[in-house]
Image 1 (cartoon, rainbow, N blue to C red):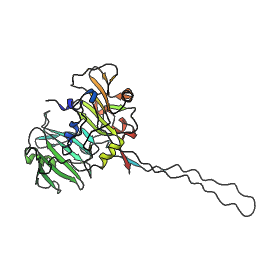
Image 2: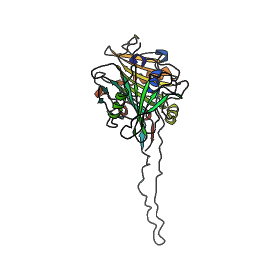
Image 3: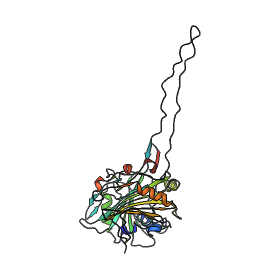
Image 4: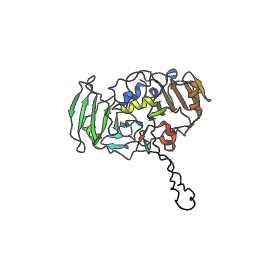
Length: 348
């Protein structure tokens, strides 16, 4: 079975089924290489409002010489403040809950932050905790016939278990962690006891998350592309971008995910230790839709575009500065790694 780090180096042109959870959404775009690598992208255009320059000119005096006209200093155009919709910090931090450890988040999208669940000292993935932003609807794995069972409230707010209609053993736990915000615990590969799932939810504390960082600082991007995903795990730093129009559609989607249908144009930027058996060129090498280059003989930079000219992909790759992969704390934050134009923004 392929590891997730392998899947992140692959992509396909079909969109994922809309009922899948975020792990399926992320994984669904990873199943073809080189020709074929892709990235799901991010966001919406900034909106600016400007005010005109005001001039004050007194009327001439009726008697005597006309005084010189007095002109007030020009007022600089004011710009409506904007705020990024792509968070530069994760929405929560890692924590311990009984026999489980929820790591610091390693995935951030337009709609959520997500972290892996494991046992202490183990690398075995047991599940994910995804915290959706206020107003964003969790992706429903249950489908039309999924069984929902009301659970004891978490911190006085509603909670329930959900069984997938296609696989009754795939149970999720959903709870409201704020008035308009939901979190979802999704076991992977192995079932969890309901009491353990509720305990993981009860120990969840929103806020105070670490900065979202990436190992690649981008010096050039086409102006109409927006960032939609950052992933930093499994030996890979990964970013996905899509055209602004597609990002705008994502923002109007209740789950802020890509709509069903062909993914279309996208750009992906990956840096890390791949396990795909592909060549690791010392100098920048560009073919078909992908440019690659190896650093320190181990870490490979891969920039892929679908529906993007290879000359643009090469230009992006040439202007990327890679960080020391072994020192994630020194990686640039999202705000430092991408130009402001690549971030989805809205009026404050």
